[in-house]
Image (cartoon, rainbow, N blue to C red; front, side, top):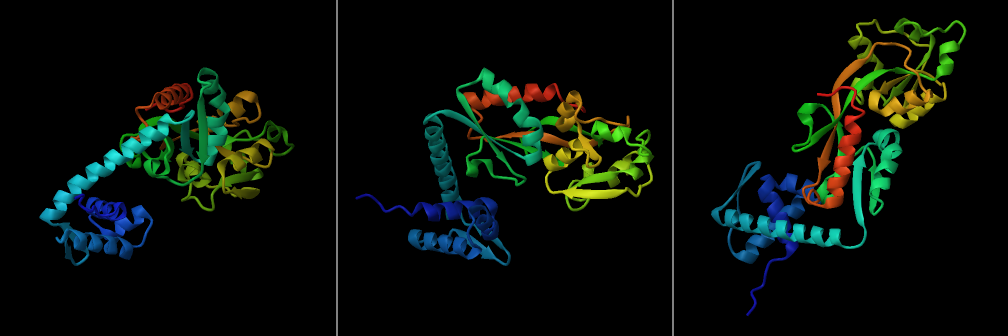
Length: 307
C-alpha cells in the first residue's frame, strides 16, 4: 500500500523553521504567523510520531530525527523548485524580469533598452521598478540591481556602477541676473532640490553630506523642494525649478544633451554603488546570460568611479 505522505505545507513550514532555526523567522519568510508555523511543525510531529525540535526558551534545536527529515525535505524542495522553474522558463516566449529602483529604471536602464532589443528581438524584458527589496526566487524575478554600500552588497552580486555626486541645473539658471553660479557659495541664491524626507534616506545624495565632503559651510538656500522619487527631482531640475545633486551615471545623458549643466568642478565620489544580483534559478538561461553581458558592457562605458 502507498504510505501516506505529510502535506507539502507542513514540510515547507518545517524546512523553513529548521533552516532559520526560528519559528518567527520562518513565519516572516512564508508570510504567515509564528503560531501557524508552530502548528504546522506540531502537526508534522504528530503525523510522524517523533519530536523534530527540542524547544528551549527563545530557541529551538533539531532532534536527530529532525536533522534527518531536514536533509531530505531541503533536497526535495530544491528539486521541486528547480523543476518548476525549468518548466516555467521553457514555456512561451523567452523573458527577463529586472527589479530596480524607480530612478535607476527611468534615468539609466530604460533609455538604453533599445540597444539590447535590437540585438535580441526575441527576448521580452519586464521592468519591475520599485524601491522595495524583493526575494528573486520567490517573486520569479531573474535579475535585480541593488543600490547600497559595498559591505551590505548581496552575496554573489557584481558591482555594476559607481556613484559620483555633483550639482546640476538647467542652463537657464546660469544666466539669471544677480544669481551667478561661479562658486558653490552662490548656491545660497537658488532653490535646492532634495530627494527623500530627510538626509538619512539618501545620505550620499544629501546636500548636507555634499557640503561636508567639499569642506564647505552649510548654506541657507533661497528655498527647498523635496521629492519622493529621484526621477521627479531630476525632471524638476531640467525644468529650471532649482539645483539638484546629480548622480553621474543617471544624469550623464542629460548633460550630453545639454538639458542639464554642472556649474562647478567639485565632485564627490560616494562609497555606494549599484550591484547586479542574478537569481540562482535563472543564471543558467541563455537570455539571462545575454542580458547580464549587455548590462555589464553598458555599465562599463558609463562608470564614473571604477573600483
